[in-house]
Structure formats: structure tokens, C-alpha cells
Image 1 (cartoon, helix red, strand yellow):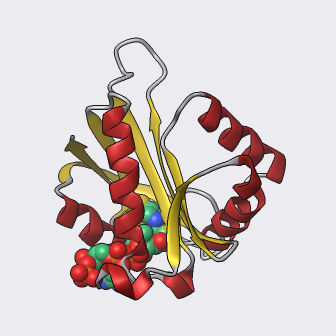
Image 2 (image 1 turned 90 degrees about the vertical axis):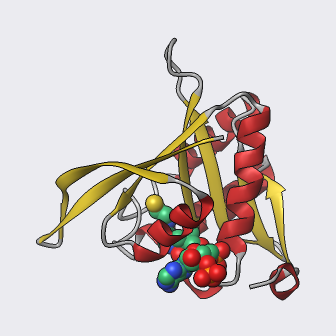
Length: 169
Ligand SMILES: CC(C)(COP(=O)(O)OP(=O)(O)OC[C@H]1O[C@@H](n2cnc3c(N)ncnc32)[C@H](O)[C@@H]1OP(=O)(O)O)[C@@H](O)C(=O)NCCC(=O)NCCS
């Protein structure tokens, strides 16, 4: 997919005015019950605290906007403890109807380059083994497989492994 095909979607650094849209987007992806660690978004106020803390601490977090609607997000949260601040954990999601249009790639690139500028050297993530689209996206960007947490999720009676992946930037 070329840049032009989703050029009506803008990638911007998150700001306070995006909190509700981000929360709706997170909630929608969570309620699919497949891809992320939540089955619904945390309360709006927790999302607000998370976003405001990210802004205050210069944590790379970007949203994809179609008009005023938040259709995706990506963040890389740096480790807080001494010895781990060179690592960052990546999380992302795109609303179902906006997938496979190159938005995830654009969001991830912007977030990785902001993470690099902030001094993060190692980007790590966890992904369910059943999540082929996300694994393909990460492999394509150069993330390598580091390990497997076996049967780490049991949801709706179904087990899934968690794959640990990382990229040095
Ligand atoms: C994973 C996700 C973020 C990808 O975002 P996206 O905008 O759809 O991805 P892109 O359009 O930029 O696709 C980039 C590459 O990812 C891979 N990919 C994306 N969707 C895919 C699919 N359905 N099947 C296989 N590969 C896929 C391909 O390699 C693709 O490159 P290509 O189009 O040249 O083949 C999106 O599917 C999503 O939000 N999923 C639900 C939430 C989630 O899984 N978050 C990550 C949790 S670890």
C-alpha cells in the first residue's frame, strides 16, 4: 500500500484533545477479544492519566487521525528502573475497518523514530502467536523472535502462546 492511498489519515503526536478518541479506539480493539491484553479499555480517567503522563515524560505516543477520529495508536513506553531505561515496550492497534491500508506501518515508523531520538535502543513487545497480521508487520520491520511464553493466555476457553520479539534501533 502506498502513502497516497491513506494520505487522508494523518499521524500526529498524541495530545490531550485526543484522549477520548484514543480511549474509544483502544476499547474497540480490546472488545474484539483477540489481539491485545485488554478485553475492554481501562476507565477513561486511567487512559487520560496514561496519555497525560506520556506527554509530560516525552514518551513516544502517536495517533492516526481520519478527520477528527482516532483510528489507531502506537506507543513505546520506556523502562522506568535504573538499568532498563534503554528499553521500550511497543503497543499499537488500528480500528478494524482501517487495517491493511499502511496505517500501522506509518504509525510504527513515526513512533520508532521518536523512540530512537529519545535514546531508546531496544524496542520489545509481546504478541499472541495467533496474531499473524501483527507478527508479519513486526517481522517485516526487522523485529526478531526472542522467546515464547507457552499457553500464556486462556481466554474464552482457548489457550494462546505469547511471542516475545525485539528490535535494536
Ligand atoms: C497489526 C496491525 C496493527 C497492523 O496494522 P495495519 O495498518 O493493518 O498494517 P499495514 O497495512 O501497515 O500492513 C503492514 C504489513 O503488516 C502485515 N499485515 C497486516 N495485515 C495483515 C494480514 N491481515 N495478514 C497478513 N499480514 C498482514 C503485512 O506484512 C503488511 O504488509 P503488506 O501490506 O505489504 O503485505 C493491525 O492489524 C491491528 O491493529 N490489529 C489489531 C490490534 C493488534 O493486533 N495490535 C498489536 C498487538 S501486539
